[in-house]
Length: 154
Image (cartoon, rainbow, N blue to C red; front, side, top):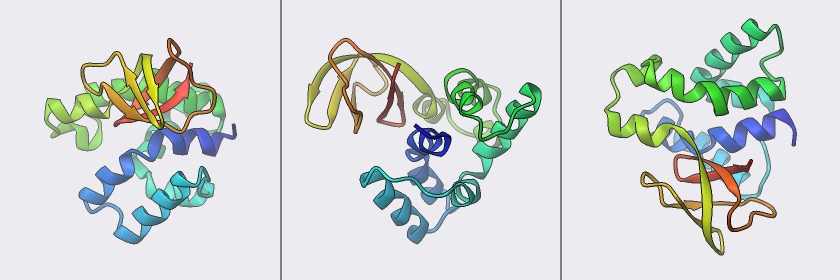
């Protein structure tokens, strides 16, 4: 998987939030949604323009690691190890967000309990059922979830 694909799988669920906050327009959201549903990825420039806060955070992580912010390991580190810390520390819009919103926005590792079509039942009290378009996911796998979407088998 390319770095921009990995980034988009994690970030697409945030597009609805960005639309609700009027940080992107409906046309941009529809484009992202269509690409996501077709399992395609926007180009890097479009991703950076759309998900500005995530890239600000990615750039700070990459600088500390002396790597490109498009490095796949940097993106993986951000979503699996740093993302929730940024939320807990009240970075950006999270400073004023209610705790319930912060909980939903976090990335979690969960076990798959059941699979039915494109819905996974997982061991999460926050989001027990999530959408997925993962290849080869099986019951008992550990997956990451973000805003109601299964993102990656770990």
